[in-house]
Image 1 (spheres, one colour):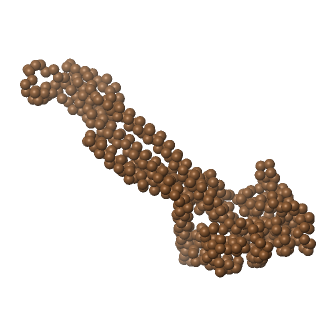
Image 2 (cartoon, one colour):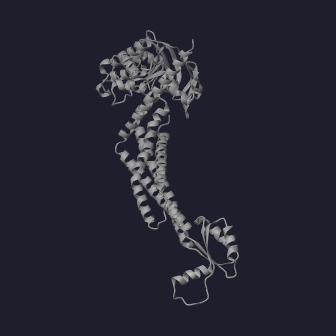
Image 3 (cartoon, chains in turn red, cyan):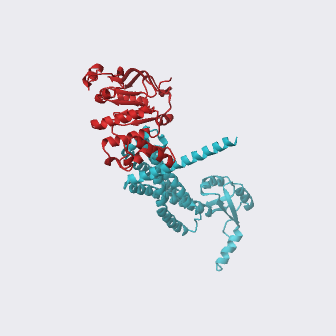
Length: 240
Length: 299
């Protein structure tokens, strides 16, 4: 079976700064992966390469067998429609309701209003916010705002969801709830890739971890029975 | 087969409806852009209307001057006085052969003398001193220099009288007005371009979050850019609409002023000016939008 995401000897340089060095890994359809590493380790660069915000300096990044470097700029929007992206700061439109925030992209794609309503209500139901459809972001807690962000990411039925520090602005309880929600979405067959440095969450979830340090892949595997956050830090050299 | 046709037709209808919904969204985004720009809209439209008013007014004045010169030139006759020894028919034939000559009228020395005598019955009985005269009209004032050269080759001409210097001065004024108008319009155009570009840049920066979301969710670049482009173009059209009123006033005023000479007959100048104002407004507004997008919307 074809891997959903394939990094093959990928290096990325920004001028003289080498953000990634010879990084290789595969992510299969339906995987749930954490991308961990300290700030500046190269996590964001990996995500940017996947959603084709950047292209590699060396090596190849493929998504469903398509080499992203060969993808024309015109086709990038199509690529992105096949994935959902979740942001640390939620990136909700402040003056629009939860419903309108989730519906925004569907409307921009010219979807019929009835279909927009069906999908948005469906997505808000998945994230448990059916009672908040008319609330604007400032009326929602941080966790609820992130749920709206997740609803927006899944409303178009993507096969891949990328989350960049989704719990970075949340309290521990909301973080756990968000992770449970992402796991629930994963169980429906959607591939999930989460960039984080919240090792407590990583430890609790017991999922595959791709660890990056100084632009290099330092570990790739499922964490089992790890004693503590400190041990993970020590094992994978993840200085903060 | 009929199923295939039905499916194709249904797909076509679906796509048309989808495009209409997208167009509606782009329209709403454009209106939203105006709403977010606030009082800067007024500044931009006033600036745009001012530049188009100045351009339109100068254009009208230059065009009216050109028509004035042209009408004046063709109405002005050149009077050619012949030598006594010259055969009037030969000279007439030579003149008719010149391509710059539009029309000819001949006044023989006898006709001129009789006319004069009838005007002044008490005029003393002397020998007719008047020469044979041929009046010609040039095809256009611009042909006058060539016509003068042509006349130099015709035998039997004693003298030519023509108010050429006056015409040259009017032509020079029209040309100066035209050059000044062009430079001033370009200067104001660049200024307006700068104002529109910077205002829309601020708007793009203010909508940075929204634009980032749209980009990440796979919305096509043209969808993000079109509302800004439409906003810029609408500034131009609105400016042209407002400028119509002062420019039509200038047109009426100048028409009246030139009408005093009973010379100007062209009434299409306002239409031409409006068409150019709309074109320039659209161009400047659209270019301003494109400039701001190039600077702040690298997608």
